[in-house]
Amino acid sequence: MDDRTAFKLFIRDVVERTLEKSEEGKSYIEYDDKQIFSVRLMGVVVSKYESERFTILTVDDSTETVSVRIFGDDRDRFEDVAVGDTVDVFGTLREYEEETYVAPWLIRPINDPNWEVVRSLELLLRAKKTGVAAPLEEVLDTEEEQVPADLKPAILELLSRLDEGDGADYNAVLKESGLSDNELDQTLNTLLSESEIYEPKIGKFKKV
Image (cartoon, rainbow, N blue to C red; front, side):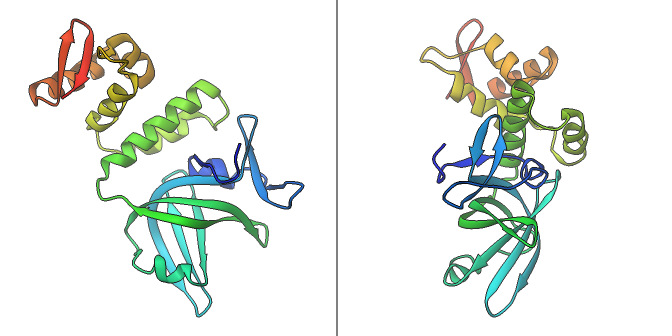
């Protein structure tokens, strides 16, 4: 994998793995038989420390926390990031005193909290398929406490991804979402009633 390709992960997947060094001296973790040099992590900024030389953000995604360390001129680029902000962090993996941290090249603000639901669902589905993540029950228990019940954004994202031209197949959406029949039916019916999707053929759904 290209060392500048940011791989989406839960923070726990990063901090609970041992940081390794490539022949070029770059830090990486092993995940699903891949060497991951750069990550993309979404969470809430729960603390911000500023000194004359660097800024440290602590980001929490409900599975774990990680330090995001910002040095030099990059401090000016990210000075508006504040405690309480939800952010999508793109950066390389580094280590300081045996602690894994992220050196960011991009910190994207997330204004719609539903995107956290979409990201969590995406990562949970991948973890279920690969089996490389920690037990899903632990994450699901945490998500049930903090994630809104509204699944519409996640289902809309799945419909877009699975639509091959004539609409996304109901059974494919059901399989990919991991939802029960009732949960998916309720969400699709809501989207239909709100005119956000339509059914061009029986069992096929498209975004408007």
